[in-house]
Amino acid sequence: MAAVGEDDAAWERAIAAASKSTSAPKALTLDGAVKSSTGRLPSPALLERFAASLEELSVAGARLSSLEGLPRLPALRRLSLPDNRLSGAAALAAVAEACGATLRHLDLGNNRFAGVEELEPLAKLGVEALDLYQCPVNKVKGYRDKVFALIPSLKYLDGADAEGNERLETDDEEDDDDEEEGEEGEEGEGDDGEEGDEEDGEDGEEEDDEEGEGDEEVRI
Image 1 (spheres, rainbow, N blue to C red):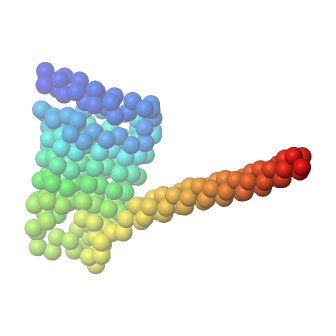
Image 2: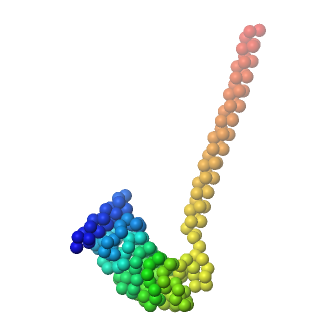
Image 3: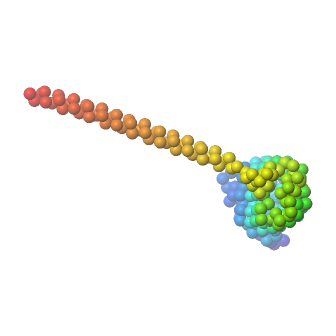
């Protein structure tokens, strides 16, 4: 029991640090924040307070061997749990119960899932992208075909579709376009300023010439 209490105290500190900027975060990243001594997630109450807003949750490298206690997260679309010790259908049954209605992206890379049958709880969900890289199940004969057949909603497995075409990162491309447009706008502002300075300089020289001519006339 002492270990559970110590774990929860560490989880609470990590969650507070990750959500300090808002009381209703859409994304919560706890990667490597806690090395669980029990192999479990924090007490459900620590995450339940964000249930209404949380769309993305990442808990990588926490030594998790169970997902018991994963609270209901009705808005969650992305769940990332790589680099843990998860295995078996029970872990994925907990995922299905907690956020199965909304979940679209599930990252289970570098865990201990060894058989396609362990993925059965995902069969009726709407998961579109599933990552199982560096899991023993990768070595099962016909692994990709079997997983796509098991999960009808699946579009991408380990970053590629059923034909082996890699997933395009369109979001990154759009961000690059926005940055380029911003840089072009800044350059345009600078050009206008330089033209204005040149015009002011020319006007000033003309005025100085006229004043000089007037002085010469007076001296005559």
